[in-house]
Image 1 (cartoon, rainbow, N blue to C red):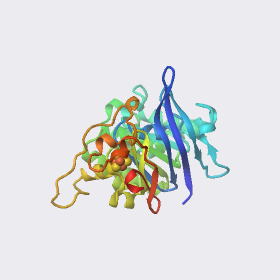
Image 2 (cartoon, rainbow, N blue to C red):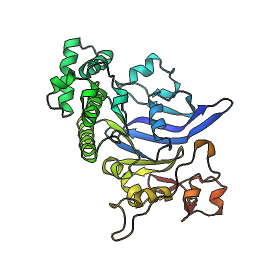
Image 3 (cartoon, protein in one colour):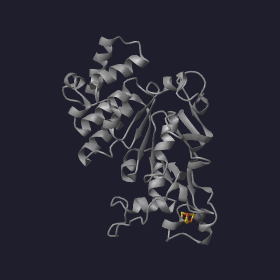
Image 4 (cartoon, helix red, strand yellow):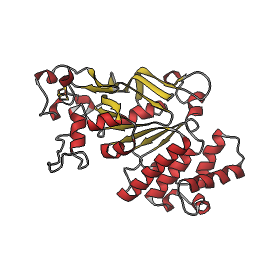
Length: 328
Ligand code: SF4
C-alpha cells in the first residue's frame, strides 16, 4: 500500500504574547491509499489540529513548530506540505482537489446565501475545466451519489432548508466533487442522531471503497472508530499515546487511557462485568501535568515515576506503539 500522507514528528503551538503554547507534541502517522486511520481522543487532545495541519488550515495563532508533513501525488515527487507558503497557490491547489475535509457542523461550513448546487459548482469550477452547465450536471450526479432523493431539487435549495443528515450528505458531495485521494472527516457525525450517524458512516465507507481514497476519521467515539479504521491513533493532551493496527489496539490496548475508553463500551467489556468510567477531564493545555500527562486520571496503574518522568514510546507488538512506563 502506497502512503499518501506521512506525518513525522509534527508539533503545533499557539502564539501567546511572549511564548508558544504547545498543543500537539511530536506526533507521527501515515495514511495509505484505500486505508482508514481513526484518530481518537477527548476534546482538547489535538486530533483536529493534527488533521487540519495537513491542509495548512490551523486556526488563528496556530503554527507548526516542528516536524514535517509530506504528500505523495499520483505522479511526481512527494510534496512537503510544511514547506509550502501559507495560503499560497500550491497548498490551495491541494485543498479540495487532492485532499478534502468534512467538518463536524456542516451549517458552519456551508454558505447560507448560496444554493447547495452553486456551492458544489464553485468548487468544481475552481479545480476542473468544466463549464457551468456541465458542473451543475456533475453536482446533481454527486448529490445522487450521496443518496439524496430528488438531487436536482436539493441542488436548488439552501443549507437551512435541509435536515442535519442531508446537510452532512451535501458536505460529503462537495468534498468528493473533485475526487480527492485523501478525505479527512473531522467528527462528521457528532451532530447527528444515531440512525443518521450509521447511515452517514456507511455512506463514507462505501464511497471510500468505490473511490479507493485514503481516509482520516476523527472521533471522540472509539466504538465508532473500531467499526471503520484499519489503523488507530489514540491522542491525549496533544500526544499520540497509542498507535497501531486497529485489530491489535482494540483487542489488546496497551495504554491505560485506551483501556479506559474501551472499558466504557458494552461491546468491549467482559460479559457480566460493570462498565468502567474514566474519571476527571482533560487538563487545560496551560496546566499540563508533570511527568505522564495522564497520571492524575490513572489511579490503577500510575506509580511514583509517572508523576515526574515523561514516558517514552515503546513498541509493544508488531506496528503497535504505546507511550507508558508500564512497558519499560
Ligand atoms: Fe498511567 Fe504511568 Fe502509564 Fe501514564 S505512564 S498511563 S500514569 S501507568
